[in-house]
Image 1 (tube, rainbow, N blue to C red):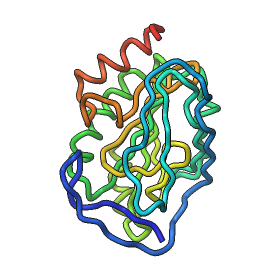
Image 2: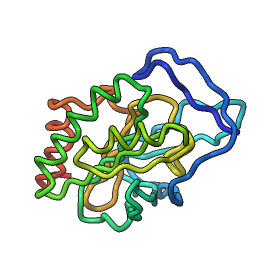
Image 3: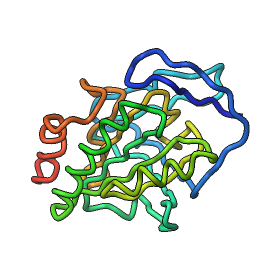
Image 4: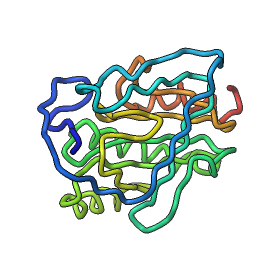
Amino acid sequence: MWLQKCARCAGVPFRWTLMAGAFVAGSISAASAAEGAVGISTAHPARVGGFFAEARLTIGAPAPSLTLTTLDGRRVSTDELRGSVVILAFWATWCEPCRTELPILSAYAKRHAGEGLRVIGISLDEPDAIEAVRKVAATLDFPVAVLGSAYAGGYGRIWKLPASFTIDRQGRLADDIWSADEPMWTERRLDRVIGPLLGGQI
């Protein structure tokens, strides 16, 4: 059994829905951030009755690894993307703010792909919504995987949407939704956060 938030997103109160089973489009592996790293520590702020353990993420520390299988059957691993700037973008078809953010992120990904930017979209939709997920994914310039659970390995439970985590070229966590000053990607925030990483300024 797992819990998924639905109906409202981006920090606005949610309605909880209890769901049975889990649809996993690929395997997930997670490595905890190295202890003792210098940076900003952020504890995953939500836990339901201890069902999911809190994830502790540290800006500047090695990012948790994540391995997924995309809708077209390709295996994607953050460990294998070392040398690129990676954005893990969690979303769902029922999340209206996500549907606003995705085209902005897609356009930015396409524009900066040649500079080493890689975006992976990760849907939290239920299995019976797979066709709706495919329809949205067809409009995006980055691969999409279906997680099928609110739990994302070392990134903890994704308790609000949209949610994104950014990994720099050295595999370090550079930005995460829990400590971000803005809940969504905008053109201005992408330029401010991702621009310097693409330019080699860590």
